[in-house]
Every structure is written in structure tokens, then in C-alpha cells.
Image 1 (tube, rainbow, N blue to C red):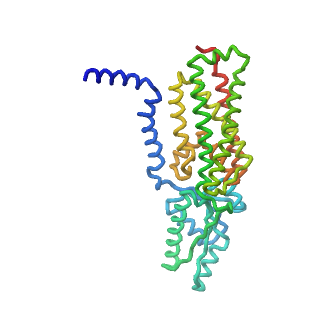
Image 2: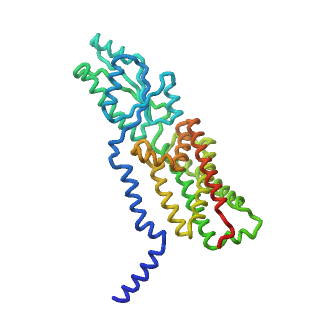
Image 3: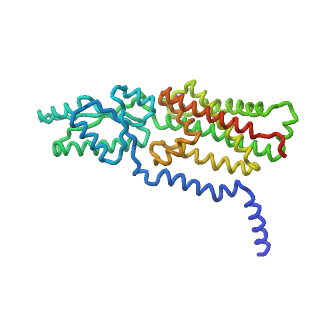
Length: 367
């Protein structure tokens, strides 16, 4: 019994010296609980941003808008009346939007006056694969029933039809694959480079490199070039498998390859910076896990950002992977060049910041 206890204590000391094992034993489950708890707790109480273009100035459109507001389900955001709604949806990558036609009130008035059968329809634009789309449909059914009952006691007068602004019948995989591609870029570039830099630092390999003609920027750029090529090949393979298995409608555009290169630059630079700051490879692994796992779940890889609580969306707005994921979807799914260029600019700016920081902090003369 004494030998068992002695061995257990010795093993425990060895075990607790490992930063990685301690992270996965204690920090990782707590991290998952906090992340998923924040995403799914009271999700139903979160309002949906419903962009609305109202071309009708009649009393019934005003009534309809007031019913929308009274549901407490939506936060209404106005789309200018001079905008083409489908272009606006595409340029702003909206998942749901509502259009009230100019004859909405006059149609209801005519139906009431003539006692004719029929309804006056609004149009719901959106992405059927997103959870917010189904919730919005449910809310519109409630609104149309309440409004019809208020006007005619039971007779249906208001309805809605649906339309996909992109004209394509997108499936879940069309939106899922770009997120997986973005996550793959982060994992391969950031995790590996964090480990490599931490190991080179702790083992004195940087000091050996200092004796060669290789410059720090040359070493950094060579890693970036390697990951760019490898991740482009990964994108081609992932997209091919997704197409063969699920017949996706998403398109592999030239801009998607630009995002892969920009993402490789961003996360290679970030990985280098984290590895330089870490004391040893195990600490580097723990740091990259602590940063990488929240980004996986909070950057729209698996879940639509619109379905998350507002404070989670605020956190997502400062995570680099968010802009890579959204940019890939903008070019591969939404065909939204303006939004894609914005996300690309953010990815490149962050990449430059991390690259400069890593190159300045990296010292090849450390012990």
C-alpha cells in the first residue's frame, strides 16, 4: 500500500508538471461549459435583427410593423426605400430580411370592401439553412394571425411568401464547408507554429540559426509560403469531397484562394507570436488551445453568429477567425464582393500586425 501511494504521488507530480495535461484535465472542460452555456442559455430570449424595407405608407403597413415590434422577437432595422433589396441583402450578407410591397394596405382595404377571399402578402427573404430563418417564419405567422384577427376577427387577410435572394437552393453544407476550411487554416498554421517556435526557443535552435545567413524574416516567410501551399491543397480536397458527397452549390472562386493565403499569413504570424511568448512547447500548446478552442466555437464555424447572444457576437467581432470564415462565405456562398473585401482587409491588417510583432520579438540569440 505504501509503494502504491508513493508511486501515485510520484506520478501525480510528473503529471501536474505538464501544462498540456493540466489544461485538458481542468481548463478545457470548463472552457467548453462556458462557451456552450453562453451560446445555448436563453437563446430564445435573444432578439433577431430583422431588416425591413417598407414601401407602403398606408395604415395597415404601420399596423403590421407595430405588431412586429410587439412580438419582442425582432429588432427592426430599416432598409432605405431607394435600395434594391436583393442587392442590399447580398452586399450586407443578411440571413433574413422582410419586404412590404407598396400595395400592401390598398390590397387589404380592397379585400375588406369587396369581402373577397385572399391575402395581402409580404415577402421574407433569407437563408433557409439558418436557425434565425425558421424562427422568423414562426414570428411572421403569429403576426399575420394577430393582425388578421384584429381587422376581421378570424378571416385571414395577411400572409407572407418566401424567396431566396441568391436564387440558389443552398443547403447546410454550403455554409458549413467554408467554416471548416477557415478552422483548418487556423489549426494547421497557428497550432503548429506555436509549438515549433516554443520548441526552437527552449532548445536553442534559434541561436544556431543565427550563425547562418538566414534572416528572421526569411524564416518567417518560408513558413508562411509552406502553409499557404499546403492549405490551398487542403481547400481543393475539402471542396471536392463536399461536392461529390453532397452536391454543394457553393462556388470555389479565385477570391477563396486569396483568403486561404491571407488566412495562412494571419495564423502563421499569430502562431509565431504565441510560440515566442511561451516558455516551452507544453506552455505553447496550452496557450494555443486556450486561444484556438474559443475561436472554433465563437467565430461562426459551426453556429450562425446571428443565433448567438449579443455579447457573444461582440466577442466574435474581435476574433480573427470570424473574418476569415465570413469572408470565405461571402465569396463562396453569398457572392458578396463588398463584404468579402472588407473581411479580407481585416485579415490582412491583423496578419501584418502579428507578423511585425513576431519578427520584432523573436530573438535568435536567446538561450
